[in-house]
Image 1: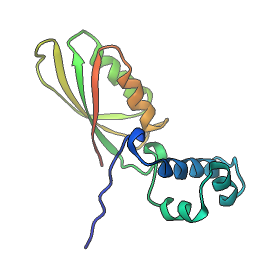
Image 2: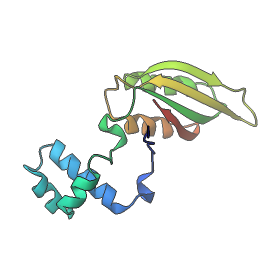
Image 3: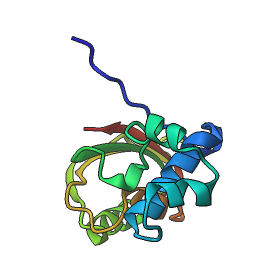
Image 4: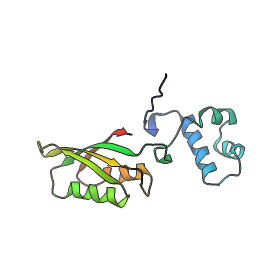
Length: 146
């Protein structure tokens, strides 16, 4: 039995054709167009290309992810940073399952957070971006989606 592997890839390195497929899907799903033909014409994409990739290319916030996620963070060793991160997860209606934190070394701590994302009230990528832009967050890496 062949099992599919899924990859999360940054938009800046994927072929433009995949971005166009996602853009066409967004037009269709938001009712900005009345047909697939109208969407692909507006985006500049052929119908055959759309159909070839439409079941295989998704945005992270499409709801096509699982129900749990693990992120790894490098945080400055400053009071309140982890608390602010947890507040953001709660604001997005996420639920923390586990937190693993190493003791700070050279002014930075490595933290892994495993949380339930099945009931998020906003797109997952916005949650990650909100965390990433916090003062004191040096690095955020998505480790796992289940």
